[in-house]
Image 1 (tube, rainbow, N blue to C red):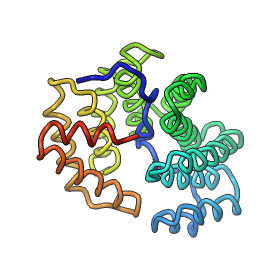
Image 2 (tube, one colour):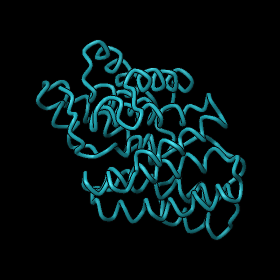
Image 3 (cartoon, rainbow, N blue to C red):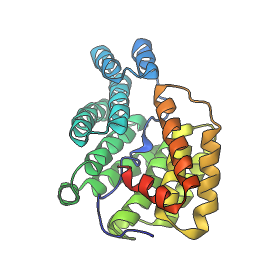
Image 4 (cartoon, rainbow, N blue to C red):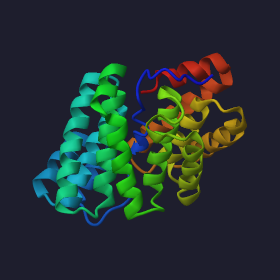
Length: 257
């Protein structure tokens, strides 16, 4: 059953995914990237900022967004997302064509909205700001799987939480973009998990088999880094909840930011 009441304007899944990991970019610092891969997000961000340059600032934002995505405490998650937003904005200023910078800025903004109260999220204008950042990323690279999945999450979550058409949201566009992203990157675990989660959360009966198929595909993907290991754990918990019945499935979905 879809919920048109804006409990949160949208989720950090748009926070695809979507949020927290993204497309490969030019040449970030190797040591910082290794720290990110191992899951030491704070140190990775510090190292990347120390080296500097747009690619490293984008990596710092990516690391902090990943940490915020996995954080259970809303206040701590907001602090990390704010820092990520600052770094991603600096990266975009230095290189306006760096898609990663726009993506991480969108993810940061979405996470800030998802971790606030409904009223504060609405007043902050998070949904509109996120949409503009995603549009910029898609304009620069229309077939970027991360941009497509993040945009798909935005459409589905805004439609589900605030109502279809709110801020220009269209759930069918969201479904199409998510499935396109999964087709472009079939071995991308976070995209597959978020695609399944957000499609099943929207609870359109005609999409259920598609959502389940993508979830089961996610369970078969080998994680490439610590973040993906954590996402795979969530995917397994989601599949277990589904096996227990619709009540457990909805409880899992409602617990996600």
